Image (cartoon, rainbow, N blue to C red):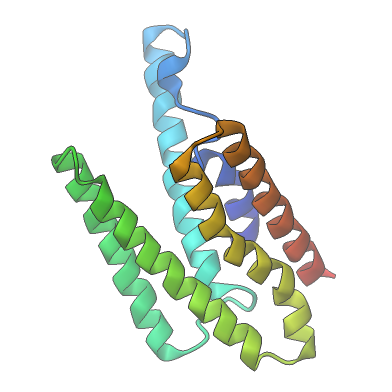
Length: 169
């Protein structure tokens, strides 16, 4: 269920659909659409972070990873508040999110290293997608060619779906 939520909301989380501000709907519908997109992007971001720490068996790999995940979640929440208060505070959010993602990547790498053959087969595609996320984030931040960012995002999404398909087999 968590994997399905992460996959379904990934385009909203990644901003691939843009925002409602560019639509030409009447006033109440434009605000409602903007609120729905915001809720979907937040739910998607939280589900992706949770999936990063809990995949494939729904448990944290080690007890310290649980504490790190909670600290990362609190840092990201605090950074969102700072970003809404300070206009140039986006870098705090970027650093907090990067810390949380890198902690999850390390957790997945440790999980893969300690896994048996069956669990390794389940995690190989997911781990590959997780390792490509920093590349996609870098390409998106540089934004030399926006289409490259879009294509890279969908490649990561396809690899993630492939990994989750292998896990379900």
